[in-house]
Length: 336
Ligand code: F6P
Image (cartoon, rainbow, N blue to C red; front, side):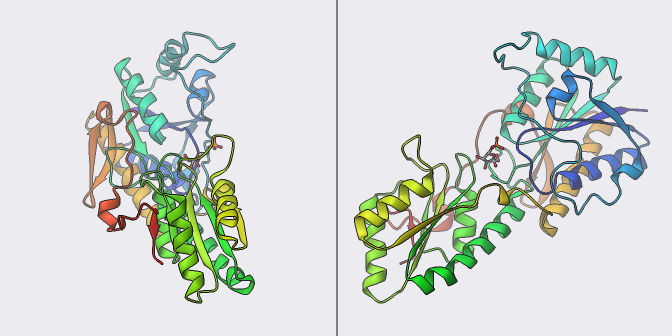
């Protein structure tokens, strides 16, 4: 009878609990495995914060946002000041002390990188990709992304009415770390007029020309969706940098909004619940078949897996060509 640990690491996102449930139910009900929940990501494995999970602990959690296990950005392979240098060794010992046959690591890029290093240290690891940013290499999509896009789309929708009343340019900053997925998808869905992404070079003169043209033909307001990871001065937020420039260069009254953690909170969308459930169930299958050192992945809507060493540390960025959006004007995406 296999005994498996589950941990969730990195920034949380909607759908994690659905993934925990998918792993747990398949492992316990289908295969009779034992499941141990590890609290607060890899730091919980360092500190032996582990609790056996019965099947009933998995009931009623598919609708719940965040992670019932807690999370942290603790990095076992990075020695911070005052920390022990043999963190990976302690983690290996604790994995053995807990009697684990395998460990499921639910997380984004950083987590999958750590998962790969632990696999190389000899632990039996299966990764599950999660993040609102949708930037995990090796899979077509991560759960959390759809929920975040829904929230961001609704937020931008709401900016239209107030922008229209006041005849303003509204700049909204979306999360995504170094990727522009959320800004692009919510920007398109909510009818953003200009969308700025880290993946697409833009020229502020052209952005301002686009906004002036809109104003000159009588369009009363504009919406500018900006990814947090765009090229900008370090100390400024993307929204503040772009908003101030626009106001100064065009004279159009401009306001800024940073949507922030609202994008990560709350209940997962149906699509994320389904994807997370499929990922979770597949992770348990991989463990049953002893296919370790892998990350579950979605390719062309088929659930499969990829070797963790192919994933570790690489980013999956937007390919602007896939969206027919580079109009050759260096203005990001401008729908005029
Ligand atoms: O990776 C998810 C994410 O929300 C990014 O979009 C954002 O840049 C980052 O996490 C924020 O991190 P933290 O939770 O450490 O503030």
